[in-house]
Image (cartoon, rainbow, N blue to C red; front, side):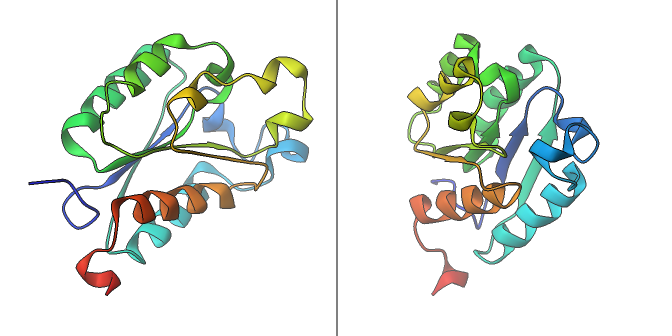
Length: 157
């Protein structure tokens, strides 16, 4: 049975330093917290008959383990890899194992208006969509895009 929003949550993954959202560099990342992001994503998923499973880690290996878990138990992944965006071929390799599963990359800030080293994203090589510079609202856009890629559920019709 294929996983859909009706029978599996969307995994929302957050990389390093996002546990400090709302405290760290609010001039770049805003004042919303990770709890605010979770509520926003839950609301966006509920509008399509789904749920979310939000997690954050400062450890690359833990993020990879969660991607592997998502392959078995989730219908899609919204990922803000933080600084691992620009450095982690391992995250790209893990995401590449998620055949047929929609993946959307999210960045709170516009990484293309920042330092040149932030312009490269390994994760983008796998992502079905990339959202940058929309603040935490980008997460809701990511959830909506996952829902669109999965197609309508019974509650959508």
